[in-house]
Amino acid sequence: MDTRRLVDPALLPVLDAFPTIALTNELLGPMREAERFAQLPIAADARASEAITQTVRQAPGPAGAPDITLTIYTPSGAGRARPCIYHIHGGGYVGGSAAQLEPLHRPLALELDCVIVSVDYRLAPEHPFPAGIEDCYAGLAWTFANAASLGIDKARVGVMGESAGGGLAAALALLARDRGEYKLAFQHLIYPMLDDRTCIAAEPNPVAGEFIWTPHNNRFGWSALLGEAPGAADVSPYAAAARAGDLAGLPPAFIACPTLDLFIDEDLDYANRLMRAGVPVELHVYPGGFHGFDIFGGAAPVSIRARRDSRDALRRALQG
Image (tube, rainbow, N blue to C red):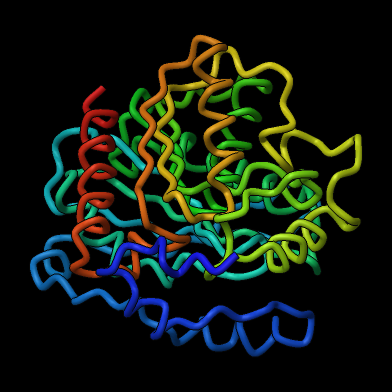
């Protein structure tokens, strides 16, 4: 179905500027190389550049694995412990980096007066599950262990991510609950990539997934992460959070997804299951939006509204 007619008119220029690309193994190398130099279409914030300190640290990875890189954004001024957003970047489990998000993270740390720790994790298919989620857990462990020197209040640490980063954030919330070592204050999930079974749905959503992140790309990403075709019976919930049978005891969740995003059905289902498990959930659905609309939509009113809703929810969560 041609769903362009359903796109918010203010977002149509984004589709012309960012054409949908079909991922292949041959494209991964050039894509990642381009990402090293890519800049998000966001104007630099001079105040944030001056007021926020960026530090890049190496931290021990999982047992037997390489060290991981953490990019840390800290507001100036000491004297009290601040809340922390532990952020996980997106990229379909096969791309992306923490460095790309500096134009977002600096002003966010300033506006919310919080520390942001952004983790770089190993990417599939070279490093399939559980490499990525274990890297994220190792970074979380380091953050808690070094909270005092980082100026972080350990009682107000939450996880956040977009797309595959949102999927990893949801999986990390499950892993933290199950291992019982670190208590998270919240999970902030922006169009999270939660369920490999979307790839094999008998009745796929007829209006979702035409733009940016398509069914083809979704199958590519999940196959890379799992090392096999998506949809098998034994997929771990730490790979695909929607596979978890028990969602009780998870931290409060913020979930946002636009109506034309391929993940809309799995995100709505996960939000409903969290609510039925007694987890507080704030759910936002944005008509006429597609994958990445909040970041790339610029001055489109629906994009502004989505960014504002996200910031407001983060502010409430960080204040505890």
